[in-house]
Length: 162
Image (cartoon, rainbow, N blue to C red; front, side, top):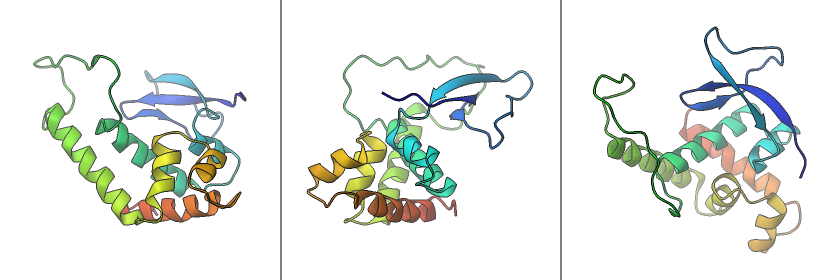
């Protein structure tokens, strides 16, 4: 497996890649090294096959997928215990945040449409590579990239990114 390591700032939302390669984390901030080849979406973006807006839309969709906890659970939950006075966003409970993420995810998939939602789920959420997704859906070779880009454009519109 290929490794494409990039230094990213670690925020509450997860790793954030800054535009400048020399950009270091904010003072007092933390950083993490991310393998950009790990995600099919990141792999496509790092090679110029997806625009920044399309990549951001895919990451927003994946983030909502994970926050909504739509993937099947295979182990116990390791969520942090909520502590009174611990700071953070206390306006929503964990269940309310999960419901909101699910509503955003379903809205984004609906915005993509029925013909495009399959490729979104397979590549963005399930982490399948494009060739594997194309074979699974019995599509012509190299057609998945175009369809994925169309789907991500619609998702970007839903998230108001572009």
